[in-house]
Length: 99
Image (cartoon, rainbow, N blue to C red; front, side, top):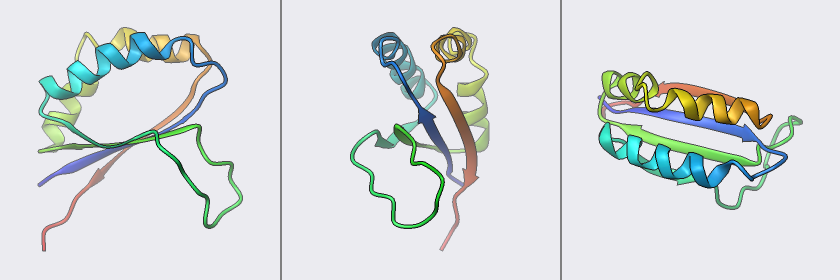
């Protein structure tokens, strides 16, 4: 069953992003992931929490694929890069469903 990574990022400075994107996109592909949402225009319809600077949704074929991506040693420096640049990040794993 497919699983989805939903990421909300609050970014003040985008200087780190080109390095992060280059590495991360290759790792998503390596682990059979597929971007469904990557940034783009957002419009808040409900709620009081501030919307994120960027929203990302990545589909993986299984939870194991998602976990292998997140735990890939090549991804670890990218997590640190985000943190070092003050990016507030929330990552959620969400199970898909079968009809």
